[in-house]
Image (cartoon, rainbow, N blue to C red; front, side, top):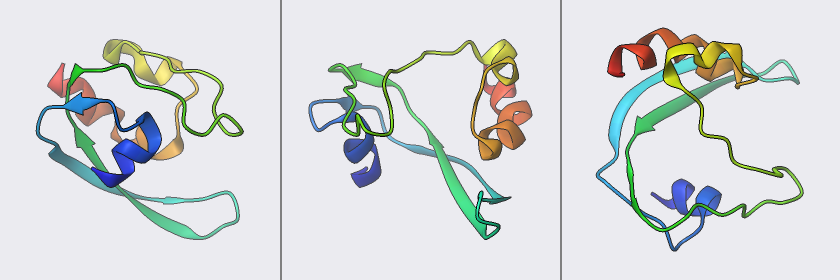
Length: 86
């Protein structure tokens, strides 16, 4: 939840976070990282950009063809599992 509020703002309310999976991947400097992923739904509030020096917009992407978009390498690895939730 701390990371969610850090990324989307403290005014947002979500349903319970449900663990979706984790994935090992290589970050640009060559180190291995593990990303833990969760799914939830926004129930109130609007996400806001809290790191404008890194992000300039939000995009809602269709799960059915999510790999057609520029998504993170770890999310690309989880895309098949994510599509099963749809």
